[in-house]
Amino acid sequence: MAAESAGQGLVGQGPVAGEGGTRRWRRGWVAVTLVFVLVAGGAAGVLLPGLVRDAAGRPAAAGDDPATAAARRLGERLAGQLERQATALLGGDRSGFLAIAEPAARPALSRRYAGLRALRVTVWRPAAAGLPTGDDGHPGQWRLPVTVGYCFVVPSCRPATVEFGTRWRLVGAEPRLVAVEESRAKPAGARPWELGNLAVAVGKRAVVATTPALRGKLPGLLAEAEAAAAVADLYAVTGRPPDRYLVFYAGRTEWQRWYGGGRPKWTAGYAVGVGGGHHDVVLNAASLSPGGTGELLRHELTHAASLPDGGYSDRSSWWLVEGLAEYAGSDGQPVGRYEGLAEVRRLVHGGWNGRLDSLAPADDAADDRVGGAYGVGYLAVRHLVDRYGEQRVRDFFRAVVHERKPLDDAAEAILGDSWPALHDDCVGYVRAVAG
Image (cartoon, rainbow, N blue to C red; front, top):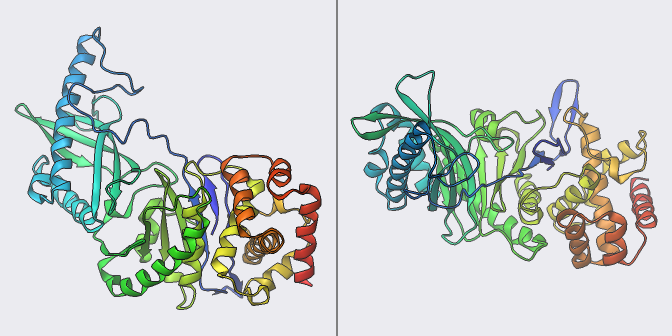
């Protein structure tokens, strides 16, 4: 349950507590939301022969020097191979998908093909992200960065985007794919379908995937994700819910690899932006208690529904982003039943400065500090909802997080009140609840 913007370090964490070196999961989960500012650079378009572009996105120039002109011609041939592979993928032709590759590359490509087909890939649009260059580490081979726009289940979706490296060699006149590298762009990192076999369940609003070993969890996970999606849809503040929510359930090994791994040790889930307005959700199987999955999913899917395409970068609005997701996660339960109240009390009575804009915890924050920050965000948003109603709070959220209006301006325009006075009113409510 947190947010992080690429290159800007915006973080937030969910509540857990620990005593004597033994982890005690208060709700059985903690989550982190990673919001990825992605520059697609034309990635959603198919690269056709004759339309090869250089690294700056410029079309092939008539006055290229001979080496550049040769690289462009080679790039067109590589693009043709990628197009043939895309056609095979979308047509369910595994042999055709593998045909452009050398034997050594086919096992990894087979796993990728199986994962993409299991996720019901409906769009796969590869484009060169530059010109091919010689590979100093592999004489006789060429490197080509490739950007792909892709969709699952829904053919008309706005494509998510991934970039990865490829290596090629010429066998006679035919380019052959030698290797496909994992995507490494931060914070998204390598997608699960790049790394191993997947078992997948598809519902009306959610797609849930996990490892074959955890396949038995899919029916229950899908049911919880479908229920959470119905709640999260209400928080699509721009009026357009995601076409599908994509949820990955990670085993211990996968948790360390999917989307780059490296999450704080207390994290049990996160959402990460992957372009096209999509935010994939990952749950840590090792950290979830039986009763915590639904609340975690409501929280994270609300991030997927409510956050802007390019993420957000203002730490001062962390309380609002996480508070709204916590409010959705609580699913209308009375304030007195919110399970983070103990952490809120410890934070409020433990030296908190009373500023909502300073709540965002650091990655290494103590568990109580993290849980208390989430709880204060929840209570502040809950107070706004009680006073103004859900629709006006969603409008306020859109103005602050999507339109990036200052809180003073958004409060006056949407809520009709002064933000400094309203801030103090929210903090007063938090202190009253904390007792």
